Amino acid sequence: MFKLAHISDIHLGPLPDLSFRELASKRITGFVNWHRHRRNHLVGDTLNLLMDEIERVDPDHLAITGDLVNLASSREIEIMTAWLKEAGEPENISIVPGNHDAYVPGAYEKTTKAWYPYMRGERGPAEWNEDFHCYPYLRVRGPVALVGCSTAVATPPFAASGYFGSRQARETVNLLRAAGEAGLFRVVMIHHPPIRGATSMYKRMLGIRRFAATISAGGAELVLHGHTHLNTVYSLKGQIKPVPVVGIASASQGRGGKKPPAGFNLFFISGSPGQWNLVRERFELTMDGRSVTLVETTRF
Picture 1 (cartoon, rainbow, N blue to C red):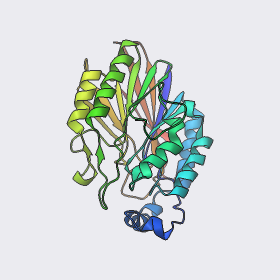
Picture 2 (tube, rainbow, N blue to C red):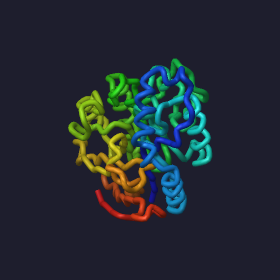
Picture 3 (cartoon, rainbow, N blue to C red):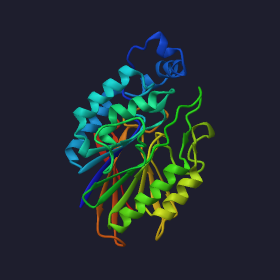
């Protein structure tokens, strides 16, 4: 039995001070949005409660599907890097970036370099270099193959879209096929929901049809995503049966907002190729906001 925990959209707060130079960009809109809206609902104590409960259930691995920071400023990246080190070893945590981690031009490279140990694939170089395509990556943990994909791109103000391109699609198919031939349970991690209509147009993922073809051609058993801050279950056409596509609420969302409160998914993976068993337990912040509890169990 392999236990995989999943969180997303940490948006680690509070927002540190930004220089005038950093604010002279798209960051000014995000800065205003944080102080008018997000800071009232994205509560640091909530994330701590979530991580305490994840530690208690003791998963074999933790998947984080993007938006670790808010505006991808240098100070935010430093703080998140320290948070990751405290959360666990790179061998036990796998991450993919979200649109907030690539908030402005140049941010994607900075976050990838800083967090590279947590997204280094089996064949990735020991140290990050700017000429290396980090995504997709493959990490094998027990009977599970984690395939990390990136949709993170810098976008104009008031846009939060993502992109899944042809190069990444081809390489992802190859990784999925190889993992399938090795008899592994394949989990694909991506930030934007690869489902048409799952989010508004300005937040959508470009390349949804390409991603669906990638899953169909390469094969997979589970897709994890974030971005919407919602608890959702969709599916994509698989080679044998539909592939569950599962989203989760923001890991820092407190009670009282328009979005559902923070939570995490815990997946129990057992069986063998052709006879895999997958059960999800969804945990959520309690009504009083003081603890985290199991609220739903689903067998796929």
